[in-house]
Length: 552
Ligand SMILES: C[S@@+](CC[C@H](N)C(=O)[O-])C[C@H]1O[C@@H](n2cnc3c(N)ncnc32)[C@H](O)[C@@H]1O
Image (tube, rainbow, N blue to C red; front, side, top):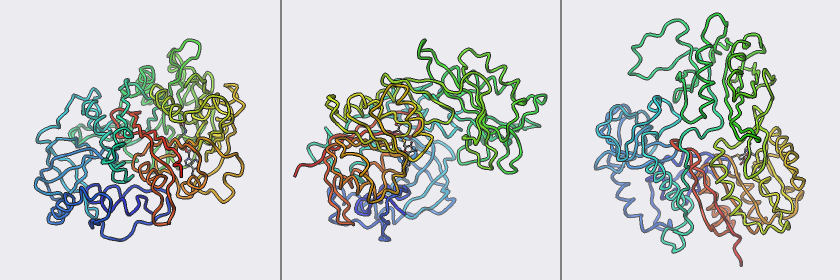
């Protein structure tokens, strides 16, 4: 199963080979042709010669596993990895935690076809836009990969990534005079810390320490850790006392739990993912807002392997004394799986939901409901979606909200529409969407549970032809069945919201240029693509794309 169509990759694989790793549910198979082959009619002849040079260089140089190299990072790519080259060679090596302009010594950890991965050993000279990372864990924690890159440089790197994907995977030529008006500048997030309304911490029996601290002896239950998973490990936890991405009251709760939970008198133990013994699995902190006072209100969710409320009593007493805490929940997940969603849920203190508002609507959020994790930037994102949807506001239009989650996008559009139809695979999210509609007095919205990867011939018969389709898939993007359905449906407008610019570019290519291998014509014109930074310091990029049906 592969995703990026061969015609796009012929060119792109040479300089951006990691794109071959992007899997999705589309059914096209990646051809077994040599990805280094540059085809003369690939539509990017302007660059072909440069890439040929690059190609021959990269073939002349091929590093061995464990080889130590001096490298320079040129840009950031997929998952925030640095794109690096050996001086004088076009060969691409990807490195975690390498930033543009940085020169460093790295060891080849993995060879992958026509590129390799390296582990950074030592920085020779730092990157162009170095800033001191405010978080003490930034160098070790896999969450904020770019905290010591200036925010302006982070934005530039994200914008460049989207632009390259749109050109090389989406096949929208930057020589086209409309290109600069289609490709919008990234919308920055004006709150760069404390923006996350949800954080999930894990308890573990193996504390992870970075190499430089390894000689610090760990004794007794000092091995117990509460924090974030060490990058690349499912069983090792980086112990942390605070996270600069979450709210201040959430940090107060984390610090209170850290102070207390290792006390042997409480009899608490972390869950061991190997032996499956132990009680505490996760601590999930969610920040909402009191609708009357606009002050923060917090939910604390202890995920445990069994239901033993007496063990949590002391923690609950101390945490409930923090004024912002309005809800303490206990999700019991007795399976060997280590997710935070329990098969049973108990309220240990206060109410079972917290509230938040978005575009003037109120949402009730339970421990396991999906809600956009950066509320501040979600306001901006949803305004952009509304602008792109361009509803007339006379209540005559039908909106189809694909991958609707808890219905937030569709509900914010409902007041201007005749009817909204939402589709989503998770039953709980559909139940939340109905609850949210009721809570906001919205009666012109229907939410239906269904798997959009498995749509059949009858899909589309249960709702009238939409005037506007909103599609907001998760990272794998849209399934080929859904692409074909949309190309047949021919709704006048599509707003494609994406959290993965690579699969987004691929799907835009299909919708606008067709699926060449299957002799299917595209029928949309890309009007705009707007990158939005929802998560500063992380590699994530959101995009809002506006597509209009071509007139024949
Ligand atoms: C990026 S979220 C968008 C949620 C929502 N539009 C919002 O803004 O809150 C993607 C949603 O797609 C849903 N989803 C994933 N795969 C799906 C599938 N095959 N069929 C239907 N929904 C799916 C997920 O459960 C998730 O709620």
